Amino acid sequence: MGTEAFEEMQRFGQPWIWLLIGAIGTVSVIASAGAGLVVVVAIAVLFWLVRLTTEVREDGVYVRFAPFHRSFRQIRFDEIESCEVTEFGLLTYGGIGIRWTPSTIAYMTARGEGVELQRDGEKSVVIGSQRADELAAAIMDRYS
Image 1 (cartoon, one colour):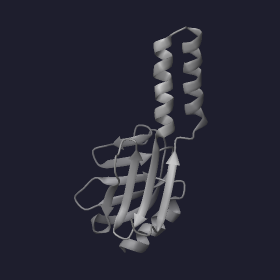
Image 2 (cartoon, rainbow, N blue to C red):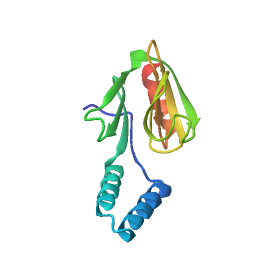
Image 3 (tube, rainbow, N blue to C red):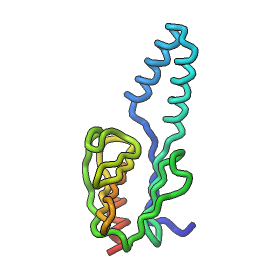
């Protein structure tokens, strides 16, 4: 692995997710629904393990949404037509996580800002970021 111009790791940190999981778990305990509690614990563990890692390296932008991606997805700089900071809500792409629309693939752990990469003949890619300006600058420094 080379030297990264940018690296960021994000997790699902929204309080409402954990409150919802806790509330459903509490109801499962009160209702003595053992199977329900097992499912809630499994969902909580999954949310705890999920992380979005974004790296800008010498040869492209790398995205990994663990544990769903076993390895990084590469977007080579020669594929990128444009790069811009964008804003999106939770419903812009239908929620959080890995989202697909007819024209876009989006990776996000929360609403807010991200970077949209337009690609030649391919779906655009939106990568959520807590440091969207830094991510866009690192990409533009490398591909332009």
